[in-house]
Length: 283
Ligand SMILES: Nc1ncnc2c1ncn2[C@@H]1O[C@H](COP(=O)(O)OP(=O)(O)O)[C@@H](O)[C@H]1O
Ligand SMILES: [Mg+2]
Image (cartoon, rainbow, N blue to C red; front, side, top):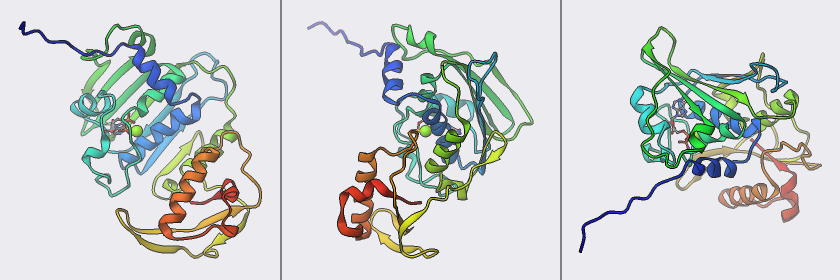
């Protein structure tokens, strides 16, 4: 027998397929970066979003003050698509539950931007790379792709990562109110521990009118849950469905999550009605 080997390769289009899987729009793309800031134990993250993405030079910037990435971290973690973050544990070094899952969060940006610039500072050294969508997309194969940093230098900047989306592919104006609301929903839990600033405003928890809250405000219930540890929670039900089209959780997600959550804490929803789950919200 001849001793030849076959090689499995990934075409550049793979990036597009993964990106599509992550749905488009500025909210999910920026949310992935805020999630990365959370996983990097950042005490704060600053987001700049333009109202008009078609204005000359319009860009979206997400800057965090987390632990940043060294040259090797960029190489081994950031640029390894599908790298399993949780293989390094379910908690961050600072003790936060890890949000990252699939190792493809960074690709969500390609749904809305032609260029992604990542500048990472760690211990007085800055490394910057530019990822260009069309360039990656049109390659026959992307494994082992060599990237030359656009900067690799000493710096006095603090540790952290800043990601800039350039040459935005968004057609419509960004509704900043709805953008803020969507982020408040997604990061309601995290905003206690990590300050999130969007343009000039800090993210605050959304106050929703509750028909029913268990336990009654301001109490929290506490329970030991296998595999998770001690969990503090409350569950609220709204008297009307959430109508915001940017609402994070789809109906099925809400049902799935609420079902699991309620089962795990051994609760019954009011009237034990599944339909009610579309009215539930909690953080
Ligand atoms: N802002 C950041 N600060 C520090 N490390 C980061 C940051 N963003 C990404 N990383 C590193 O790059 C990896 C890949 O990120 P991502 O594509 O979002 O996938 P995931 O979050 O699922 O691991 C992360 O696991 C982390 O190690
Ligand atoms: Mg991530």
